[in-house]
Image (spheres, rainbow, N blue to C red):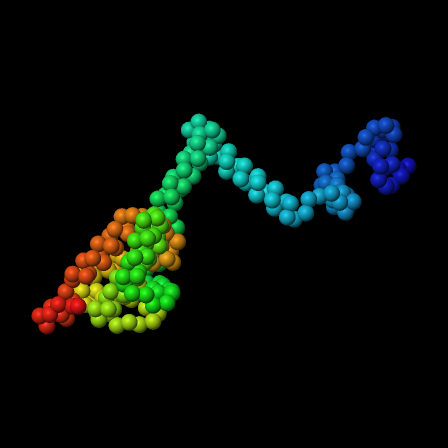
Length: 230
């Protein structure tokens, strides 16, 4: 007589003793294991979502590094050398160009921040800064001297809040032969004043030469009338 049910039936059918292991079908066994392992008690010490994401990220970084190391000459050491060369190139480029230039056409601030001073006073201040090697300040003061001189000669109408770009554009219409140099001077003024750039002696000397040349320049209106701008 067979006894139905589970292990007892199998053992009686096979005539096996209690020491013989019983084979359980693969699919039910896997499902039983999954149910058992899904219990919370087995996952109390599992990493949280953030930790799993970080682990996956660093694993990906490791794979990328390994891939690049295999492709780079000299393996990992070669990759390190290449990275150092790239960083050195970026550093050299930043040192050469400085911070990014101001976007052309963007609004600059007023050309004059302090109280009214004459062209001679601005020139004297510019020369003082130049003698001390303060080229940024020297360029600023020389540009202000240029604009004050043009206002004195009535080539520019004095106007509060005027920017260097506006002054250069207006003066360039009266002095077309100097229009390009005026625009360059205005851009250099804006670069050191608003763009975070540093300038040098050569830039200052160009502005000083422009200032002296403008003193001798004839305006288009005066040339048409046959007179010399005072």
